[in-house]
Image (cartoon, rainbow, N blue to C red):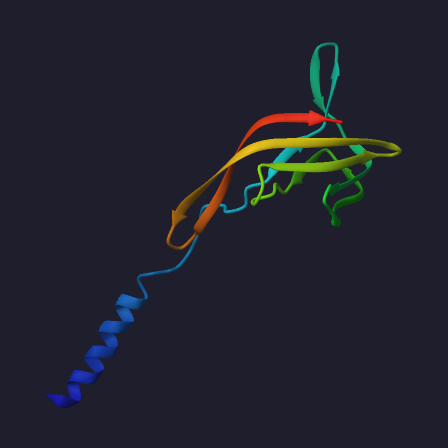
Length: 126
């Protein structure tokens, strides 16, 4: 009887530990997605931008795009502040865009952890 006890315990632990797969199927990246469009004859069409360079103001070492060709871009918003400011340069034209938002931290699940959700309240161009 004693020799059967130890293998039964190991089999029992194996089945219960294999039930938890630790997979996160929900995306945990929350970024600002922007597309470029052209309006002709009151009709909106996708547009491609050449020589696109973007970096965060106050984070100049974080070059996001460098002379890229894009029709959609993804910008990371600052999770520690209610403002993110970016320098957006296309060819020799530069715009400074500021995004103002409120942040909410939400628990997705034990496996996925927390995410920060952003509610954009204002966009300013300088």
